[in-house]
Length: 317
Image (tube, rainbow, N blue to C red; front, side, top):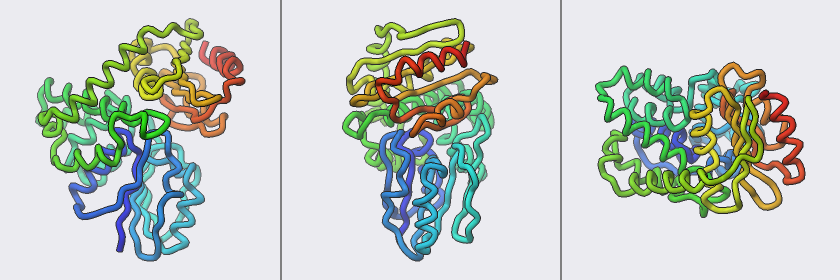
């Protein structure tokens, strides 16, 4: 039997997988990519009797590939917190899916494992922008303020590393990063080892400093739109910058765009209770989706930029 782990290359996917493999170690094949490369199941070559574990990857976007795997006799375990639509009922599918606010995939895995490796879930929640959920989880552990802050910085740096158009944009390819993380049972051990952690943290801070010099494309009482220049650092920083700005402007919706050829990638953040969820807004565009407070669009044609800004400004006034 082959075991194949399919996971989003961001903090949530990495930390969810680390928890599961600490509980159930053994050799597996890794299938992952940049954060927005979510149609991952189509890349899986598996057959009768194989086990595929899917973490932090939209079921809605992978439905056809999932059904194909099940028809071929593959067993699938699925953990995710994104909008899924109707979850297939199949004897070979074990699905733990919860799109509720304040939940990420690593929290679902933490629940599944009874909190056995909770430090990874805390880091993942911070990386996914779920600070209150992370603090609440951390309160159940013997963590001091300094240790909690280290997990916050780790989560943010792991999440930051997943942004880019291709793996060439990333500081470290996600599969290689996971193999380094897999040396450690506790995420604080990875932080203490310096090396790769310091490289991720330094790269994130340098890119945020570069983004600080970009003027808003549009701003109003209810929102802000920022269009970044065409550069590898802008493709990396887009999601982290959107989350950072959302933390600074807590009552405003934030849209950050980075060029991708003749189009844009969009990262959207909206405050809790906004009249339109970020996921609803983004799903109205091809390749769009996410969660109520944080979502994105994979490809917005350049010619639609001003129409996007007009719609954004009318909804988030």
